[in-house]
Image (cartoon, rainbow, N blue to C red):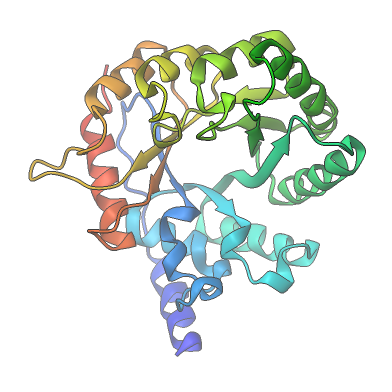
Length: 288
């Protein structure tokens, strides 16, 4: 069955055409995490190496990110796997613009060890020719906010320095239940660091415990990508959880013209249907 699925995807990809429209303000991208249930590593039948072609053929999306949780465990630290994934992306006519990495701990006792781990992720991103490496930021509220900003900057700087040496950029995504779940905090951190290789990526869902609307506005001057989190939809195709017209207007009004990446996490629709619903919503709002 696995061979049949891979063969069919490869054949379909040969004839696929990008469905993008001219005159869009931003470009709609796809997060691999949206399809997590489909991958073999999560009990599905989709080979991670077929993901670029699947994204192009199924959704007409050419800007994609990758998440190593969708990779076979034994391949996650294998440079050869990343080279093959890059090859498959090129063959499919897609671009891997971002690699998802884990959490940087602002309170890490061994920062050298932590930095070394993220250097490996940056190296993998370089193999993929990705522009960005996405990280979370562990910022426990057991310390003062001002002290947290100092420690977070100190933990991030060597990682950002290494990314810059490789021509890449570290992008920070909010994390709930932390200082970093607040977009205003992340904007203050980016301003404080003023580092060419450190930027932000708003994620509406990760800021919902704080203020996703004000947080997004605060983050936009420092943002190079946006994660469009979605869950459930009403009969009109609008998000039940967020005021998407308001959110996307704030992004467009900020002059953003980059990639807004679909990150579907809902339960009512399957992965493919959920991505398509989010894509339809984003395309509907893609105007000045």
